[in-house]
Image (tube, rainbow, N blue to C red; front, side):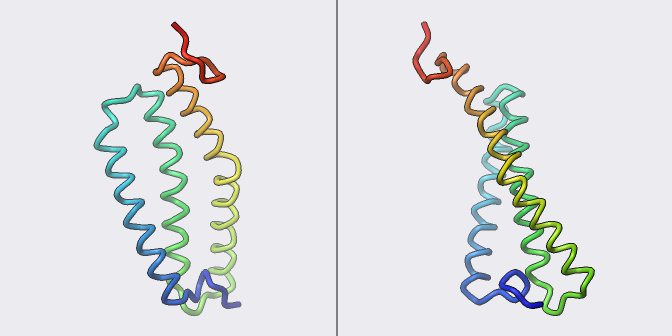
Length: 116
C-alpha cells in the first residue's frame, strides 16, 4: 500500500526538510538555554521536544522507504499511531505543566493574575 507517508511528493519532501531544520534549531536553542530555567521546567521542555523529535524522525525514516514490506508497513503504522497519541495526550499534558511552571516563575496564579 503506497501512501503519502512512504511515497512523498517533491513538495512534501521539501516541507519535511524545512520542518527538520526548524526542529534542529529549536532543539539547539532549548539545549543552549537550559541553564536559565529550573530543572523542573527543563524536564517538561525536554519531554515535549523528545516526543516531537521521535515522531519527526519516525516520519523521516518510514517516509524514505520506497517499497515497504508488510512488516515495515506495520512498524510505520505503529510509529504514527504512537506519535498521534503523544500529540493528543502526552505533549499537551507536558505543555500544561510547563505553563504552570512559567506562571509560578512569573508570580501569577492559575488564572494568570499577578500575585504580590
